[in-house]
Image (cartoon, rainbow, N blue to C red; front, side, top):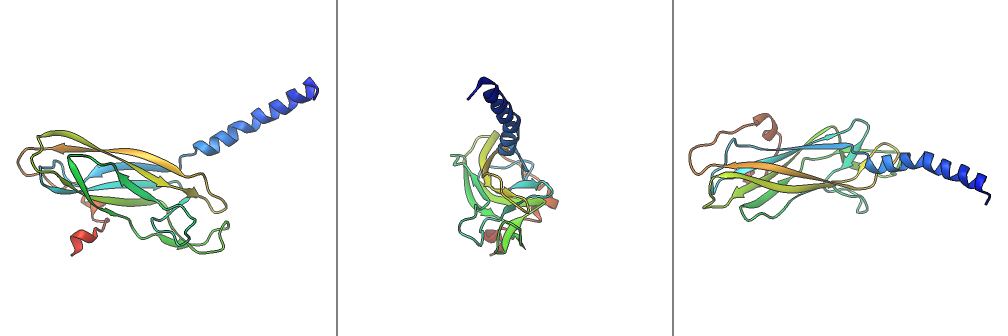
Length: 183
């Protein structure tokens, strides 16, 4: 290949490379984590929420896709010696059809509320704690899917040695259903 042809080929490759890299780096899901109490006492059970905002024009699979080859949305909270995760709660997805699939899918769109029911271990000293976790998902638009992603997050948990904490964010936690609490 002549040096002139190589230069044209290399310039064209560089011109398209940003588009390919940009598609890999597209972040169509934002997440915000919070808890249901202003402070948590040792031995107390509390709720945590991960509020997802899926960019308009995109969706993510729900946590139990109808097709075994689809990537589910999964919330994982890392093990922590100060806390025990009792339950993870996912909302029901919406059934929809998209150009890239012949079958009906169950997806999350827009604002989505995932939850975790967590117990603080007995005997903990007062002070700030942090729970860490990850959300794995695959975002798609009507025609194709982006590569699977993992979004890490942290949840601040203020621990108090005693005293009563107050419930906060009822507008959020009222939307999350926990099987454990419905029995």
